[in-house]
Image 1 (cartoon, one colour):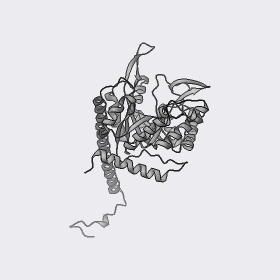
Image 2: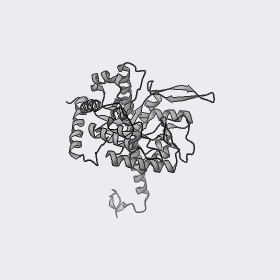
Image 3: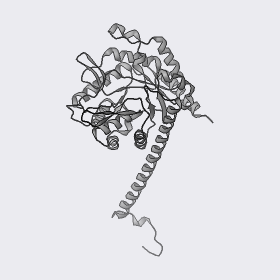
Length: 360
């Protein structure tokens, strides 16, 4: 009998073999469609030793793509510190465990076009590493030639929906595969918005054909800070588009009005509310999900991070069971309703049945 590790490697090797046979320069054929749910960790240099020592408990690794953009784009006026040597090390990692790439600097959700040099850099990295998928944020990060320095929420309007769709199509054309797009945390609701965040995201997904990377701590923080129901938010999203989940933690900070806000800082353990949301997503999304735990600093013992991966697996299992029961109950209610309608119909074929003691 194969172990989970052996099964995962077999799937990974099958995907790589298929991928290599189908790839063209215009269609990299990336898919994040695992055969079953998988749970993994964001790659950070401080966690490298622990990740390598516990591959049997880590199904997938997410790597910040921008950290590995090469110097080939320096001539375009932007310098990235990592060399081809680091990219080769990343390819070695990808040969041992499924890798997904995560971008942080494109600014896809903007009326302004994404800089071509950034798309080219991602295209080169994707071509060399052959990840299972790549992703970016629904955010803007620059405007008027100025770098904001963080992921900012744009106005949720028709203009940014159309701009995001154009940028995502350019990304697909240059990189060869559509990204999964991620919701961001925002302490301030973007002015000039015509749509709720959920509707805005759903419209971008529909216009672009992209999958969704749903960050559940971002959702939890936004719902807490802006006073809405995160479960209702989930119900307004196209569950079939969800491919990847991010888990993280945060902390409370003072607010200007004397209250407090929940800050998404990736420096704390995943709170119970986020695991509850993961369970709810698993109950709604029937397709396999890739779940990534993000931790950017204040690193605990590796055993603590692995325990959070186990907690994620348990939440997925509970959600899958809840979804299964809901489906079974729904089918049963449908069957009962259909039988009731048939029995009450004037066209119900009584003549097809023989009732003892009664003659025609």
